[in-house]
Structure formats: C-alpha cells, structure tokens
Image (tube, rainbow over all chains, first blue to last red; front, side, top):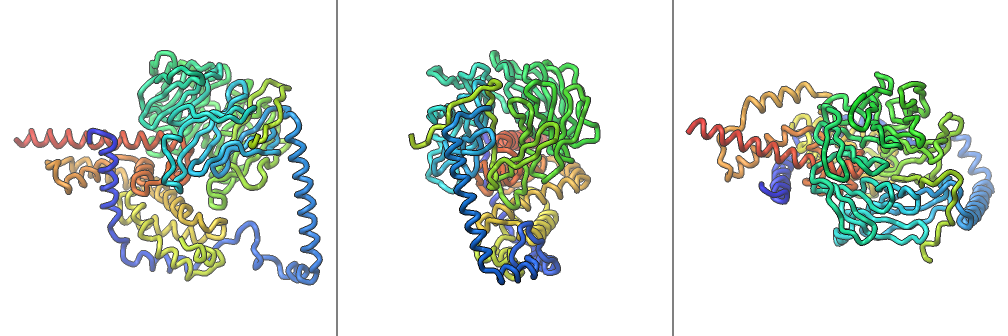
Length: 415
Length: 185
C-alpha cells in the first residue's frame, strides 16, 4: 500500500467483497408492509386529481378559458423576449451576475435577467467560482460529466473567462481557491494535496505548499490562505508556504473560513462535536494571527457559512432558523430570512457589491436535485424576491465593480 | 430505473413502487453496509430510506433522477442513524480497540480484508460515506457531492483526507501487528 493507486484498488476490492453479500431475508417484505399503510404526500403543485371538483367543472364548462390562458402566456413570453433583447443592448449598471445550472455557465444582468450561456461543452460540467477583483475575469470550475466516459480528464480543471470577449482559457488542474489581489493569478487546490499559484501570463505555476488542507479561503490581500489542516484552522503564507496553527477546532470543519475585506480578521463556524462534522456553530471571529477569538452569534444558535459585508461591518450567516445578520462585534443580531429547507445551508449567503442586499440559495433538492431557487433579500428585510427564472441555479457569483461603474453589454456567444 | 415504473409510483401505484424497491434494495443495502459497517443498522437505514422515498415520491419531478434521489435519501439516513446511535458506535470502537490488530500474515486475502475492516471502522461515518460513493459506486465528484449535500470542493478535500485517514489507520494496524509478532517471538 505504498501508493495511493494501490490503496484505492485494494479499497475497491474490499468494498466489492463486502457489498456482494445478499440483502437480509424479509427486508423487502418489511418495506412493502410499512409503505402499504402510507399514502404518498401530495406535491405543492397540485395534480389534476387534487384540483377541487368545482374548479374542474368550471374549467370543463368553459373551453375558451384554456385558450385565453395560452394567449396570455404567449403575450407574456413576447414581452419577456423583448425585455431580454433590450437588456442585452444596454450597459449593465451595477455589474454582471454569473450563475451555473446543469453544467452551463451564464452571464446575466445584475437583476438576473438577459442571461447568456458562456461556457458549455458536452462531457463536462462547468461551475461558477468567483470574479477577479477588477470584475473582468470569471473563474470557472470544469469537471468531468460522469455520463460521458470518453471525455478527456486532462481538459478539466480551473478556467478563466474574459467577460468582455467571452474567451475561455484553461489555467490548471484542481479546483479554484481564490484570486490574487492584483487579479493576475489564480490559486488552486489539488486532489493530491497541494496549493498552487497559476499566473495568467506565461510564468510557470508555483506550488505554495504540499499539504492536505480542507476547506480554504484566500485573503483579499493575497498574502494568506486560511484553511483546515486536521482539527486545526491554519494560516498559510502564500509567499513562503509557512503554515501556522491559529485555532484548535476540535474536529473537521465543513465550511471554508471567511476573510474580512481588509484581511485582518477571519470568521468561521466552530465544530460543535468532533463526532458530528456538520454540527456547526457558533460563529467566531479572530484576528488573522489567531488572537482574540470572540463569539459573535447567539450562543444557542446552530450557525455556519459566515459571509462578510463589503464594508466589513456586518456578517451574514446560516442558522437553523434561516439567515441571520450580526455586527462584527456581535451586537445587533437580527433574523433576516426564515428557514426554507435544509438545503439552504450552503453555500454562504452572498452580499451585493454595495452591501444593500443579500442573495442566497434555497429549495428542495428532492424536487430539483442539484438546483436551488435563487432569492434576494434587502438587508433591512424590506424586499424579498426570487431572482432566477423558476428553473433554479447551482452556484452564482456577483461581479464586484466600483460603485456606479457599468460595463458593456454581454457579447453574443456566437460573435 | 424504469421511467414508466417511477411515473406509476408517483401516481400512487404501490405495486410499481414495490418493483422499484425490489430492483434497488440490493444496491442500497450494499451501500448502507459499506457506510455503516453494521448489518442490522444497514438494513434499518435501507428500510427507512425506502419508506421516506414512498412518502415523498410525488416530489420527485424528474423520473430519470430516481436513482440518485434514492441514493441521496439513503446516505442521509445512514449518517443520521449513525449520529443517533453514537453511544453504540463508541462501544464498538472500544471493542475493536480491545480486540487489537492480532498476528496476521499480510499476504493473506482474509487478513487483508480484516485489516481493511478494522481500518474503516476507525473512520467516521462521513468519511466512509465519501469513500463508498467514490470507490464503490465510482460516482463522479459532482454526483458524490450531491449525494452528501456538500460543495464539490469540499467533496474533493474530504475524499483526499478520508484516504489519508484510511492509510494512517492501515499503517497503524500494521505497526501493531509487527509489535505483537515481536512480543511473541
């Protein structure tokens, strides 16, 4: 078992031996006896059987009604198409918005409208990561799609999309960790347990450290990476590769830590129990050298996935109750969004570049599998609306532009 | 999985669901066995997952997604079951430790299987789930991440760390065997 390949081969053989045993006698009968006494729950969208008898009678008595509905839908679609075409001709004030769904990456206006597919290829799954600091480039994860066994694994990895030309370049292997502060290089993590910087120019990749690091985040100033190494939250110096233990978490951490915008503080969800890796909370903040850890979330709240506001004064995080917002000194905690489903627990809520709204993913995976509804709520709780077109998204990223800046329309993918 | 069967089950046809359950129960039990390493618990988890599936089958919009949906329900059930049964797990761990590595011939297939069995028991349920999805079902990272309800990046790092933990557990077991052999020599 000297190599990882032989270990995984041995593991596969062992799994096959154990799995090949037959299921226990009577197990199926037991399942069927239990389920025979249960009626499946109704869906939220009622099927025809669930439509009240009176409404069904009225529908069948007025055949013109469905025609009217069809006409209304066609008119609405025409208006929507005109709006989309119009929005693509105008500059986008407030920056662009990127999201991915079913392995395709789209760019859209800041309100989610006028979306254009910009990265898709049979055999691969594209996933949005993050915009470069200047808002021009978008990092994208390209993974193999298991339905296409002949796809070339060497084409997968981290890619960068130029939002103005839609040019797509492969940067390197592994998965995206963060953009360096000047936007000229990208940090990636690898399956083999290393962290590497890839320049966008001709310079060769540079390995920062060869170590297995769990969920990790690059500081906005590009000096450090915070991540989990074993049960410790560590800080890695990007320049020297030096690894410093900052906090004994007592167990694995599921979520990546979050750097404050000025790179002086780290927020993270502490693991409540070493035997329960997803039992997270409370939210702690400490200085970038590990000093002065303080709890900022209410002590009884299950909490995870903290996200800093752009001005660094506030944190939003997920709780068992929904989404909470708290000042970075722990004061003024308030509940913003009610719990919708377990699946809203990741990824972290995302602040708009101006800090006025928060977007988050929520929805039932049983219904939509990997897609989530994308919702936006104003920080004062005044406005709450769904952003996606009803089909859901898998991941998304705001483009961070200076206040009031606009960018040209999204180019046509065919151009 | 037969799309027609799934659609019939979604419409409340229990016989169709029975066919689905009969078709999938072997695969589900195998996966639960690998995650939980306990036959009774594995069978409980499969039963609970299938009952949950029947209760919620109308919420499954895409019949073609029935297989990953069932798998996801099972993985969640396994992890929940293991967490609820922590006390029992701790007792099992103690027993494993008391039993010790024993004196083994590393060339023997049976001993190799026992060595893996002991090493996997030292891993957490979550880590075993990661390894089973990746190296038994050979799921692509994205599908395995979906089954565990974690981001793709987290899945990658967890898989890496689970393999390292397994390697460490196997090496510790081998060291124990050598020490025992020297003691009795």
